Image 1 (cartoon, rainbow, N blue to C red):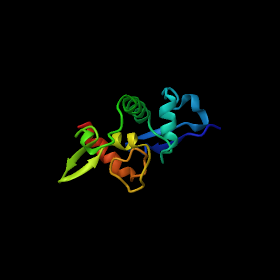
Image 2: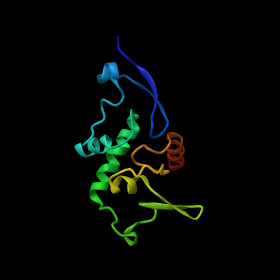
Image 3: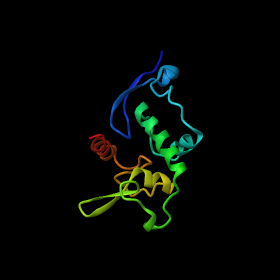
Image 4: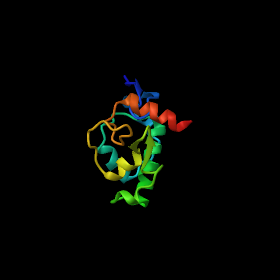
Length: 129
């Protein structure tokens, strides 16, 4: 008997069917991830992700390989590494990924899936608008 399970993507909050018992027919099976993206995902708190988020992660990892982490605050680019919200600086998902680890402080744009899923899904919806 094949195991199919309705899941919520821990990154964006969308609903999808995980076909772990029939992996070749699962929505994630066709996504080609580079070794770098696979290595990154090994460091995260994510369980299952939707196909769209897996594709976005692959693209973000590729982008991060082409641009070095800003070692000094003067090298950070607003809109790329951070944005301002209510007078506060919020680091982007790319910044967190390039930093290379999760600080486990529940950052709003945690690239490692350690912030609450509702925070991440709400922020991803904001970016879609």
